[in-house]
Image (cartoon, rainbow, N blue to C red):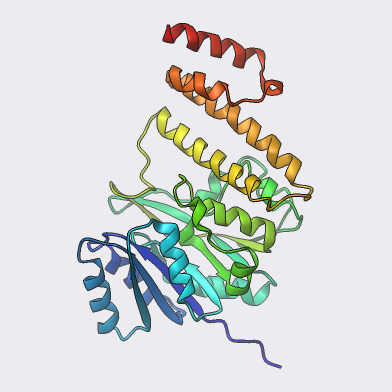
Length: 323
């Protein structure tokens, strides 16, 4: 019996990207391996995003579905788009990012040569039409990619069963660089809406993939993440933004804990330890950034057994600074 042909549905959430979405769609059209369909979910845009998207897609005879919803955040828009997808593989792409022409071709090669359910691809960061960072994967801690991974050319397959824990130290994924089988999406529980108000909301879904799915990583940086004034990828400099990222990560881990995804799982104890370590990390970052009131409030959330002499000392210094 022949294998079922792989059909890629491109999932594009969008909000007020009238000036950028055509460039994103051009990158889909330019793929050396054509996609099956494009699903756009417009998250209540108030500009001409839909007009530009429809015009381009119709002019190029591309198969597409355009869904419009009230503004409710990118997670909801992605979820709605997935619900309208007919392909058996989902490729996520934000409406301000774009793919290199070989992206889908390389994803397909990985799927055909590996029994995997998710492909996470390396990405470049673009600002003002210039590459400002050539490889996200290079940011990984030393030995991250050598410990537990099997490498074949640019493809890295993790051979252990604790990828969820391993990625506590480094999160290599970004929505526009993820492809996942529809079956695996459903197996993981898919995108859930109770994470949509959190910073780093997309990592809630990704971390569930690490638990439920077999994941491969492609070291070739074939995805381009565009940094600009209006997107979440554009992080203001300074300690308060670092705190925001740490808090977002902490909130996602707490949510996974509360959902009981890992209840009675060997990872659960380590998840709780990581949450507590993260509480300390957020406290320290507030302190180093001289946000002393916030540091005092964060200190109260840290379990007593995680009080170190340095943490206690910083707490009292913060108290003095606020008096």
